[in-house]
Length: 93
View 1: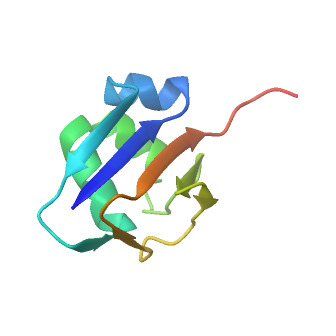
View 2 (view 1 turned 90 degrees about the vertical axis):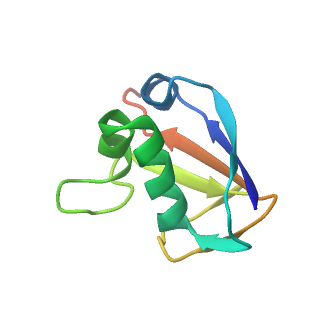
């Protein structure tokens, strides 16, 4: 399955080293947590620190959008052709 990943903030772009990428995964469907683990394995600790706390809490500092809708569950099922967007929270007012 192919999933498009868009890094919608400077923090994510810096951690991943790209603005967007297409992941080609050998499965018909995967849970969001599995896809995020693939991204962390590929891009390292900088990305991991934006997605998880040390206590493994998911998304403490970001929004995760699947096809434009906010998702907060790691067990959310993705399918081929889905678009995953990662957006860090911004400071300011």
